[in-house]
Every structure is written in C-alpha cells, then in structure tokens.
Amino acid sequence: MTQYQKTLGPIQGMAMTVTTFIGTGLMILPAMSVTQAGSFAFYAWLITAVMIIPIALIFALLGARYPSAGGASHYIGRAFGSRYEKAVGWLFLSILLVGPAVAIKVAAAYLAIIFKTSDQWILVFSLITLAGMLVFAIVGMQTSARFQTGIVLVMIATILWLCFIGDIQATSQVIESPVTRSEWQQTLYATGVIFWCFLGIEVMAHMGAEFKNPARDFPIALLGGITIVILAYLSLVLLIAWHHTYGDEVTNSQSLALLVSKLMGETSSRVFAAGAYIIAFANVAIYILGFSRMVQSMAQQGALHKTFIGLNKNGAPEKAVLLVGVITLLSILFSELSGWKMAWFIEMTNGSFLIIYTLTCIAAIKLVNRTAQVLAMVALLSCGFMVFFIGKSMFFAMIVFCLALLYEYMKAPKSPVEESNLHIL
Image 1 (cartoon, rainbow, N blue to C red):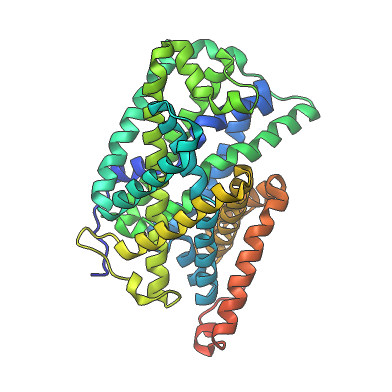
Image 2 (image 1 turned 90 degrees about the vertical axis):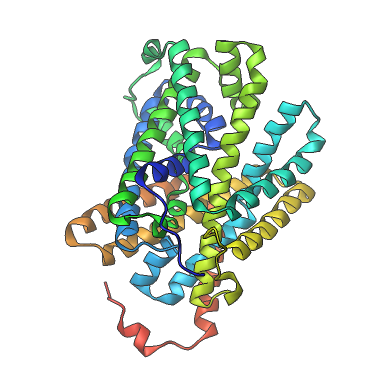
C-alpha cells in the first residue's frame, strides 16, 4: 500500500493548519514580542502577517497544483531537478536533529506542573510524550485530523473566554503606532521573533496529497487557518500587554499562565497546564507526521531505503514514523546530556525553515503563471527581509544544504535527460 487516503476536507485541514502554527510558541511569543516592541507590538505582528501571507499564498498555489507528500522539496525538484529535491529533503530531515526536541521538552515541562514534580522528571515526561506522538502518527491522518479539530475548537473557545473576561475592548489603549526611526527599528526587530510562530507552512504542504479536492480545499485550509492564527495571537498580545504579564525570560515563558491566574484565579493553573500540554502535543505531532511524509517521499525517490515507502492499513507511513521517532529520541537525549541551551536549537531550526521557504519561492517563479510570479517575487523579498534577523544562525542550514547537494551530485553523474527538462531563468 503506497497511495494516500484522501480523507481531509477544508475544515479538518484548517484545524491542522492552526495547530501547526499554534503550539509552544503560543506560550511565549506574544509576551516576548511585547517585551521587545512594547506598545508597538501590535503593529509588529501586523507587519509579520503581511510578510507571511504572500509566502502562504505561494505554498497554497503550489500545494493545490502539485499535491505531494514531498511538499516543498517536490516543488523545488520540479523546478530544478531531482538533486535539489533530495537535497532539500535532507535539509528538512536535518531539522529533526535540532527542532522537535525543544518543543517536546516544553510540553514535558507542563506535565511536571500538572503532576507537581521536580525538573528531574522532564526527561522521563519527554520520552513518554514522544511515544504518544508516535502512536498518534501511526493511527493515520483521518483520526489525527479529528483530534486536531477538537483541539482547535477548545483553543478558540479558551481565547474567546479570555478576551471576554479580560476586557479585550479596553486593550486598544496599549496600541501605539511607531513614528520615529528608533521606534520603527524596535518594531521591525520584534518581527524576527514573531516570524518563528509561522514556521510550519511547509509541514502543511506535505499533507496536500491527502485532501479530497486539493485544488479547492488546500488553499482554504491554509489561508483560513493562518487567519485564525493571526487573530488568536493578536488577541493574546493585547491581553498580555494590558494586564502586564510580561517582562524577563521567566515571566515571558509563564505569561499565559500568569494571565489565566490573574483573570481566573490560582486554581486554574493546573487546568491551564493540561490545556497547554495538549496544544503543544498536537503541534509537535503534526511535525512528526510531516517529517514521516518526507521520509516516505524520499524513499520513493531512492534517497532512502524502499522499506520506508509502505503505508499501514490506516494510510500512515509506519516505518517512516518509527525512523523519525528514533532520530527525535537521539536528539532529546543529546540535548539533555550536552547541556546546550535550547535557544541554539531554536535558532538552527529557524534558519533551516527560511532556506526551504526561500528556495520554494524561487521555484514558484518557474512553476506558476505570469501573474502569480509577481506574488512569488514578493514572497521572496519577505524571505530576504527575515534573513537579516536570523543572521549567523543561517550557517547550520546553509552547511547542511550545501553538503546534501554536493552528496547528490557526487552520487551519480549528471543526466542529460534530466537537464533537458529544466527551464533556465
């Protein structure tokens, strides 16, 4: 069995989009942006949204036209050849070395709050969480999507309730427009942090092959989901700024818990921790699914062993999921034993995602019609703008991609047939 079950509709796809973007970032990014941009944070989020929308539109166009489990690497391969497709696949898989471990440990920290245990239990909770995510991925996309839909409904209801009891109308008083050069610098600098919450567009692209009607449903799911995400984050930014639940790193990491405690009382802290864990669990589980789809796609290309091609009776690439699980396990153990700061892992992840976004936008210029090419150019400019804020953290991704591309070129001689299919810019 190698064909995906087309079970996703626009509502389920929208729910999965929301949980892709709203995960551990929801717990800290709104407070971090307010700390950095102050009263200009609202505009910093709007600016970031404006930058991310053209990138999302490009992924929506490509996902609808070329539905594939390979996602971004598939689009890049169609534009530049199989070597680039495989190299991007390796780059995406390299994120497993630095990305999921961070989110899983954050989720595990909430379990420590729920059970009132010491930090020494976080590693144990991380392993339990990873095991649950692997089971979640193996049960198949349809079951997973139903769970995601339920999570999104609960999350939206919670945010709406916080807006109601937190007097969201009064929060407009904290909004201030940047005017001077220094104010604009302060605002734009915060976009570098805010952009992190949108890392995940390419993960949804891997799911394009599983929509019942990709051309119609995929754009609706992606753009509709991003709209909900932006509204959710903006609401929390205003509430956190109005109720002053931000400040140093510790306060920022606990900002939503402090907000809930301030609005609903101390007894709500453990309930909130449970909800936070579920949101983080759902978020990272989507990434596990996306990585597994990439492994399966690379096996089809011949970059990985063919044993990872097969799907189980639920339509999930079970062996690919297990491979992703082993790599993630090693990453968790390494991060625990090395003592390296989580910030390093986060920054490396951001650089990898940005290269994938940039290459996809370049590929889109060759794959879409003339009108959409203008949109692809705008999206490419957005990616270039963000490079300045990620800076030296791009080196990890650049080195991995260059090594992967070199490996693919050395593995086999150039094929005249393949080269003849390429369109030169």
